Amino acid sequence: MNDKDLQLLPFYRFASDHISVGIHAIDRNGRTILYNEKMKNIEGLDLQDVADRSLLELFQFDQQESTLLKVLQSGEHVMNVKQTYWNRNGHEITTINDTHPVFENGELIGAVELARDVTTLERLVYQPLRRYGEPITFSVITAVSESMKQVISTAKKAAMARLSVLLVGEAGTGKDLVAEGIHYELSPPLSHFYTLYCHNSDPTILNKLKEDMIALEASTIFCERIDLLTLGMQQQLMDMVNDPTLGNHLFLASVGADPVDLIASGELLKELYYFFASMTIVVPPLRERREDIDPFVNDYFARHRVRFGSAIMGLTEEVRDIFHAYDWPGNLKEVEILLDEIASMLTVEEMVTFEMLPLHFKLKVQEMREPLKRAEDFVVQSDRDLLPLDDYLREAEMYYLQKVMGMFEGNVTKAAVALGMSRQNLQYRLRKIRK
Ligand SMILES: Nc1ncnc2c1ncn2[C@@H]1O[C@H](COP(=O)(O)OP(=O)(O)OP(=O)(O)O)[C@@H](O)[C@H]1O
Image (tube, rainbow, N blue to C red; front, top):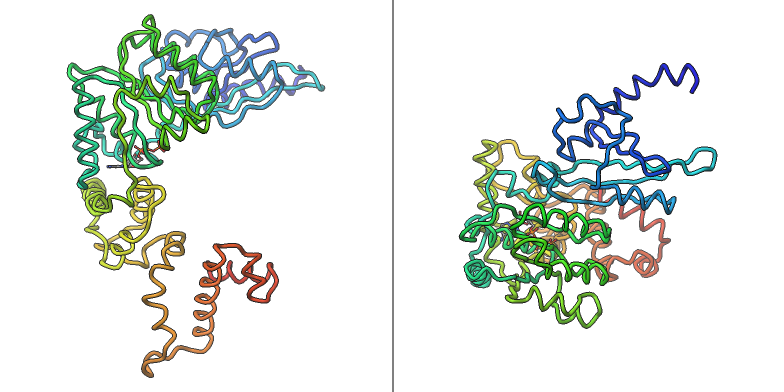
């Protein structure tokens, strides 16, 4: 190491210990050579334990070592692996990890794992109910429609009987909430609600689950979207849920489509389905229970008023009609994220008007609005309706292009052919009207 490197060392050390990314590096022998403050914090170590140890001292941590070792063996980057787990202090934590091989002069000399702690973001952005500090009991789940009432009533029965449950439904329908609702309904209660996020096929998530099952002894374990695990991992999970030496847990799971179809298409292990399906609860999509839209929106705004002192009371009739006509492919999660976007722009408004909707949503629903409103816009009914020619032509172009794009289901190439213009020209015009 030259003088300049030595001079920089304290600065690197300072930066490493103040950066908000967890860093864990191992050398070519798999020995830990760097473990920064943020990583200690993520792992939930007692700082007293490590305060007197040097930065370069060897630590043995099993939590993420396997990804590091895998990278050390393969020499390949493993990017964006999301992990949610309980750390050693029992805190739920979500990280997104990138693990890189480190080469020097073409030789593999080690690996480094960078862990971004996204726990807060995850909760704020994707689980807004938690933002208000409420545990997810059945009482905070919007269930005004008959079908949702039925879901809650069946879930309560499952909690009473302490049965394994399989929740079936599209993304964003509230399966996670129902699972957590079951957990809080248990009597006597179980102390931990553990979510196994099956969205990535990193096999280490099951190793981690195994360790946590042993440590927690008795908990509710919710395996979210088991259909997203590889069949090999489903088999491993099957072995774990049947292993009495791993504790006494209540297992819940969810799948994103009809389990019979998933089994037929080879995405779901039949045995795993049978294990979880002591009781199957189908959570219907929002488009089949539109009665839940208004109460959900009202609850959202009521919380917003309490929390942020805003004046927002609801939706104008026009927006309400749009909310009821739209299909909500992302279900209540989509409604919620849209309301988040609207709420972030609120100042003194009491009602959400069409103009306040985000542009991407306006474009999606314009079709619904257009047949009613636009046709009239193009008919001059009195001299007060007269627009400057440029404005009229712009509006006419926007209407015409959107209609044509709709006819060709968004296919720019086909629409351009029909309009007798180049693809580039059409794209340019579409960009202009979307601004
Ligand atoms: N009935 C409901 N009442 C209140 N909030 C809801 C309801 N359904 C969904 N939400 C909101 O939508 C968000 C997403 O719901 P959830 O994560 O439970 O959906 P999911 O069906 O489990 O989706 P995925 O299959 O993607 O995991 C929740 O955090 C919650 O804020």
